[in-house]
Image 1: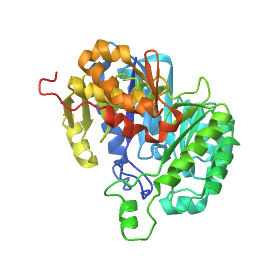
Image 2 (image 1 turned 120 degrees about the vertical axis):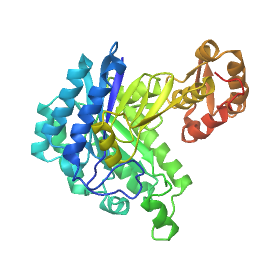
Image 3 (image 1 turned 135 degrees about the vertical axis):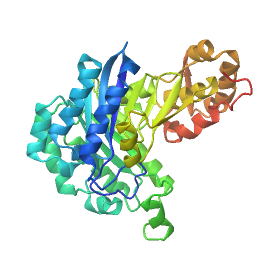
Amino acid sequence: MAGIYIHIPFCKQACFYCDFHFSTNMAKKDTMIWSLEQELLLRKEVFHNEQIETIYFGGGTPSVLQITEIERLLDSVYRNYKVIASPEITLEANPDDLSVIKIKQLSDSSINRLSIGIQSFFDEDLKLMNRAHNADEAHICLSEARKHFDNISIDLIYGIPGLTNTRWEENITKALSYSLPHLSSYALTVEPKTALKALIKKGVIPDVNDETAQQQFYMLLDQLEGEGYLNYEISNFGKEGYFSRNNTAYWLGKRYLGIGPSAHSYDGNKRSWNINNNSKYIKSISQKALPMEEELLTKTDRYNEYIMTALRTIWGVSLNRIKTVFGDRYYKYLLQQSNKYLNQELLLLDGDKLTVAKKGKFLCDGIASDLFMIKLKRDS
C-alpha cells in the first residue's frame, strides 16, 4: 500500500510561524491545478503495481480550493492510480474557509477526513500568530463539521508566548467538548527566515519558553490520556480506529508520492523533492519535465530515519529489525547509545521493542539524534 500527498501552495495570509512553501497570490491557481493534474499523470508509473491507501491534501491551505477543483484532482488520482475501495482522503482546512455550504459540499464529495487548523480558541493567540480566522469561526466550523463528518482532527499549538497554563487548559477543555476522535498538537517553533523569528529578534514578541512548552505538553498528555486518547505518536492523539492512516504510513516507512511544488516523495530507497517555486514548477510541468531532485539513501541514512520516526510512535524501534536489516554493527551501536537513557528511564526496553518513556517524550527528538549513526566510510 502507498499514499499520495498533494501540496496546495496557496494561503490567504501568512502565519508568522510558518516556514512551509506557499504563496498569498492566487493569480496562478487555475494553472497550478492543471499542473498538479499533469504531474499526477507524468508520475503514474511510480505506483503501477501498488494500490493507493491514502490521499492527503496539504499545504498551504487546501481549503482555499473550490469543491470543483478538489474533485478535478481526485478524478485525476482515480484515473491514473489504483485506489483501494475505502481510502482515507484528508483535506487540511482553516476555519474561515469552512462555511456551512462548504462543509456540506465537502461531505458530499470523496473527502472523508478533515484536519482543521484551529491552533487556539483564543483571539489573542490567533492574532499573535497572524492566523486568518478568529475564535468564533473556530467554534462555528467545528459545530457544523461535527454534523457532517465522523473523522475530524484539529491542530492546537502550545508554548505560544503569553499562553498561560490556565488558558492552555481551557484550550484543551474546549477541544474535548466537541468529542473529536483525533487531535494533533505541536510546540510553537521559531524557524529561521520566518516573520516570528524577526519579530522576536526585534523584541515585538517575547521569545518562546521551553520550560513552559514542556509543562503544557505534559498537561495535554495527561488530560487526553485521561479521556481515552492514545498518544500513538508524540504530537498525535487518537481514539481507537481514528489514527491518521496517512501519517502512520510516514512513520512506518511506507512509500508515498508527493505532488506539487516543494512536495517530497519516498520509495523506500530514495527521497525526492520538487522545486519550491510556483512559477518554475508550472513551467517545468508544462514542458513535461519533473522539477525534482533526488537523494539515494545510504544504509546509515535509512537507519537514522527509522530511529527518528519509530521512536516517536507507540510501536517503537524493533531491535530485531535493526539486526536483520542493518546488521550487528548498528544493533550493538544502538544498544550502547541507548544504555544511558534506559538507566535514566527516559527510554524503555520491552523484549524486542525500544520506546520512549512518558517522561522522555518531550525530549524525544534529542534522544533520537543521540542514537543516530554517523555516516560510515563504506556505507551502502
